[in-house]
Amino acid sequence: MNSDSDITPLRLLLVDDEPDLREPLASYLERQGFAVRQAASAAEARNIIALDVPDLVLLDIMMPGEDGLSLCRHLTEARSIPTIFLTARGEATDRIVGLEIGADDYVVKPFEPRELVARIRSVMRRTHRGVLAETQANEDFQFDGWRLDPLKRRLIAADGAIVAISSVEFRLLMAFLEHPRQVLDRDRLLDMVQGREAHLFDRAVDNQVSRLRRKIEVDSRNPQLIQTVWGGGYMLAADVRRVPTVEA
Image (cartoon, rainbow, N blue to C red):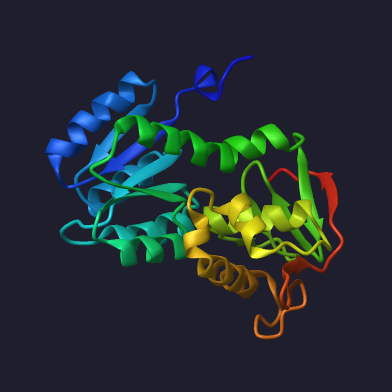
């Protein structure tokens, strides 16, 4: 059986203002079979993404000008691009904030390049490549007037409007859609959505649920779809059907 990398190289965008780190790391990742583009700033990264959307972004937090946290918010909310932070050892607060706004993982500098490769592959298994393997082709999830196309990661309202969701919000919604009317506790959601060391950031689940509620609930302060089960976690209180994909 072919691996994902046998089918087509993953396209990475490496964003770091330090050329002494960025350039050798890019060369190493290319030797591992990835297609890598480099950006020395958030502004340069935005220009590259406008022309060619990568599969995943490796993003330094501390950069002159626009910092990595601001760019991450744009990538995950407006573009739904999986993101891994490259952080300095003392930036624990920034790592937590990054996970809360939608980053998929982080590695702490200095790191072993082999560890980063393992993280990249893990994130991609949890994001669209994993969904491609687990979801039948040409099927959407339909629930309470909403429709989710898992292959294109498009959330569509009853009126046909497309609602932007981050990669973490997408995985969170997928977890609920695959387990409707089941109580999912925080630990299980963290394992399904965030992955590595997620238990250190359990408040990130509550924040991501709140963000998702603001997008799909009529009144996010009185949620009817994603219900809180006190002492238990959360539950999607809706029937879910798989229906043929409607091509745009």
